[in-house]
Image (cartoon, rainbow, N blue to C red; front, side, top):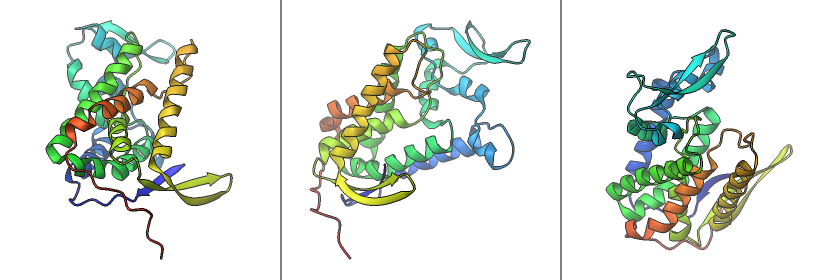
Length: 259
């Protein structure tokens, strides 16, 4: 299921939303280090780079200690924590840098699609400065819950999805009557249908809760590297604070125009 567009028009060009998308793209393609060769290289990010600039819960709960990627005698790499490496960036800085890093093309593509569809309307409702503050605070709230759930985790958290989850939480309260054109894949076939935004975003949030619960009950970790609690934290932040930030809300048109 892929959302394509909503039916809420914007009155002002979403400069901040576009700027955030451009910043994420620049960081991924030009500042993040990649491995491999050819086109596949664009989808293979450097583990060393991710460990250095990603947000690692252990580093936040153990001040002055850092985690680094080390290689043993057999050539296997793993993250080791407890060092005091001066070459590592300050931990607080990784809370921001991680918001602009991604683990692959599908990761950044999906995040930027959701941000473009839903972020422009949320920005329109509160203005550029308020939206920028809301976005960053949403990302920090997302990281805070992820740290609270796994304070000793050495797995780097990265991606804009926590901050975008805050945007989704705000959107669902601001525009409960909005509708979204959505692409559905059914085996080898696909179709485009118009469904309520509350259904699209509500199902997404319920999915995060379910997979997050499975993560907690699976001692070996079954999340596939997805920070579900960051998504939950960001979404909850959006739900709880959107009324403090939003100032202008437009009513949704009844339907998409038919040609």
